[in-house]
Length: 69
Image (cartoon, rainbow, N blue to C red; front, top):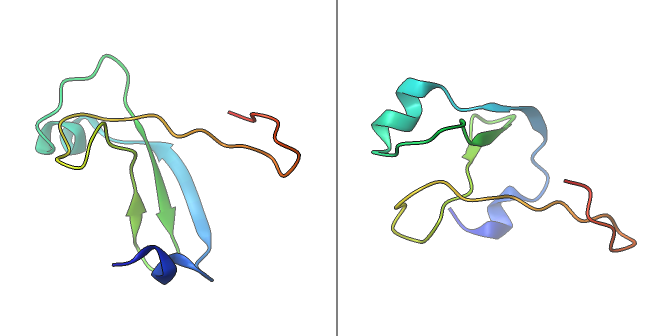
């Protein structure tokens, strides 16, 4: 999938990953990272690096530059 493939898709939920899903990734986390689910079942999960060595953080910035999350 390419980033352009996300255009037009809709977010249907944002929720913490389950413990089982986190363990399946091989991660140990004190708090569960969030996942974004799109209308076609695609999941967006921030990762520490391109190898998936751990969860990452998603920053959300408003159009005016204000940090929202």
